Image: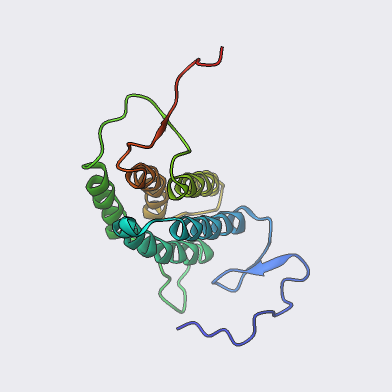
Length: 193
């Protein structure tokens, strides 16, 4: 259980922050940037949720679960796997969470017509907000991949799969809330030449 009695601790005043292991890193470290961007993605999803309509309840339920998952993902990234035993069992993203995203993508996508071109962010406010969340999610993914390819750093493979699937889900959800794709704004290649 998390208990937050005091919000400020002053421990980060000199530009470092603590990992779940107690190790301190510079606030600009790639690991910190990774889980900070995951947190940003959760906030963007929260913003998308306030723009959804009552008829988007299925998507809202999915997004609520995803926001909780993103805290799991932040905890996963905040507690690096060093190969050394810890005094506690670290929280890790699981394959089951990835599979749930895949099932939800398939569920939403089954009601959409196939795309014949790319979709531009537009249409309903909820759809646009989901596109913003999708792009933040992609940035988190890029940072996590970079971290995973950094010598001495390990990133849970299920976490990498999760963040990749999440941006796919956010894309499909944006189409779903755009009247099942009917109010999507389609890209017209070369239209302005």
